[in-house]
Length: 152
Image (cartoon, rainbow, N blue to C red):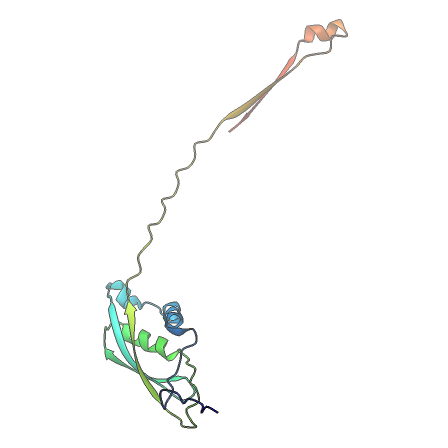
């Protein structure tokens, strides 16, 4: 009878559901570029140290390396939205400290398509002719009829 193997670590670290890619996608989805930084075209990276409680919530976030112009506050706001899955740690309520980098890059402005020039109006016309019935002499003298229809 074999003994059950114990985990490698005494304390198990919190895990973000979906992994690092999902966390980056969440951050980029919820991050809003600050207006002042956008106006002055500020780019860079904000380094943050944050604390995760035993329930998986981010309870504290501190800026380690600042960028300014509202980017720091936005990075802290987004990090506080994160939720982690914390495995049971033998009944001990543990706080976890992690670091993260939030990148701010000025979004590329897509070239607006130039408005198409007004298409030149096309003129179409229809000509129809009708031949009179040749039953009576009066109708023969009256000749045929023409209808001209012009659309533009």
